[in-house]
Image (cartoon, rainbow, N blue to C red; front, side, top):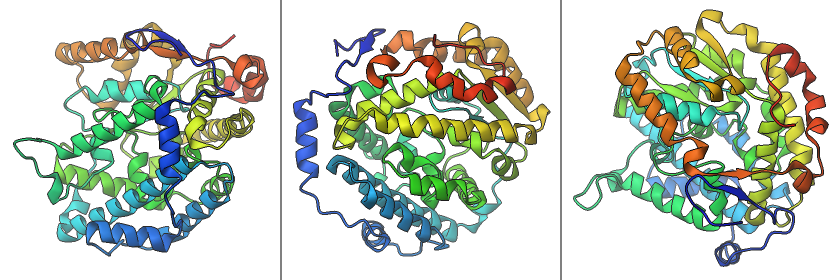
Length: 422
């Protein structure tokens, strides 16, 4: 895979037949020793034991958690590492839900906190949403959700600062990041999860055990169909509650958040945050899908018991089609004075006019100091600065760009997206 380093281009040449590192083999062997009970009863009991709390609030989420567990058990090629990762996630979400419910019961005024005109970024996965979110979060007038806070939104007694550790939550997140880098070193060039990385708000949606989150961790078509056929208003209300709790703990109340999933939930998103500024990114679907499938195939060396390109190929092309068709169908529900479409090919040429329009629609002054801050972030976090992975559709998936692109003519007909991958 080559040497890691600043600004390098990496090739992952063993996608179909991975050569496992010692760290990967050790992780698989260690995880295989665990005996995990994927049932809502076991997960909720583990969360209660961990937190000392037992009030989860409305219990309607248990139906969804039951389905998550059922889907995990039905995924025959999910590895021991994949199972262990999902078990830990489910317990973490249940524990964090307990803490959210506990703090707002003790401080009911939390639900009176206004989430003032948030800036909400949506767009296909792997279309620049992460970079745009990070860029906007560099503006200190806006509140954002760093990874260390996303995975532990309500601090516990163990998270109190000490002279040796001013932020134990950050330290725990750093330990998790180092573990992931050891097991999947190329992932940091595809999707970073370092402590200060600005997280998607999907981490707050997951406290309600919904969203498309677990589609990224396992093959769960039954969950996908359930999620797409059920109204997500309750989960978006829980997202808002999470933002209110975080604002109570540490303001300000003007947020910038993002999740690609919002692209297929625009009516619910608008109903939940009617005064938001909506920033929708667009990119040649081939570029986004190629990246997603490659990331999935790379991770399969530890998350799956086989590295089969047919799995991501059969799942993600169709999944993007659903995501984008819903955006085409619903885009007009957003008021034009509150929404902006951002095109990848224009963004990489010159982001300044786009930033000016975003700030204008958000009603935020864009002064020289802020412009300098945003320019510095853009420079420091560009792929040229940290390195990137070069993906190969034909080598890894036996696909040409046109094999994918022909399925998305409806999207090109609606949005003036420029062909990127040829």
